[in-house]
Length: 91
Image 1 (cartoon, rainbow, N blue to C red):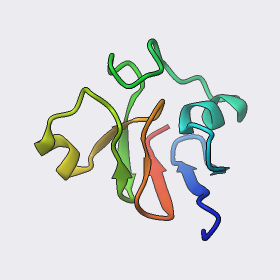
Image 2: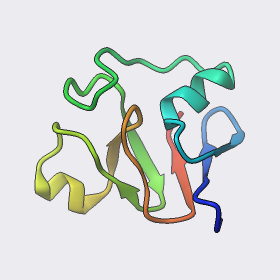
Image 3: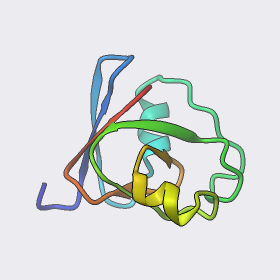
């Protein structure tokens, strides 16, 4: 999307969300009624880590190693975004 929004597909829930700029994926997931674990909501604890099934996360956490970030298999949804227009998460 050209407006900076991210399309987030929740594979287990069957929902597709549009996350606008300035809103976290975590907030969008919760607003859709999906329970998502979190603690610090600043990317330092790792409680909101989810598996990425497709797409390229844009990591802003302090938890993942450079190797894990490059692999792109998980992300912290409280603070991270996407480099691709669409993410598919295991939620």
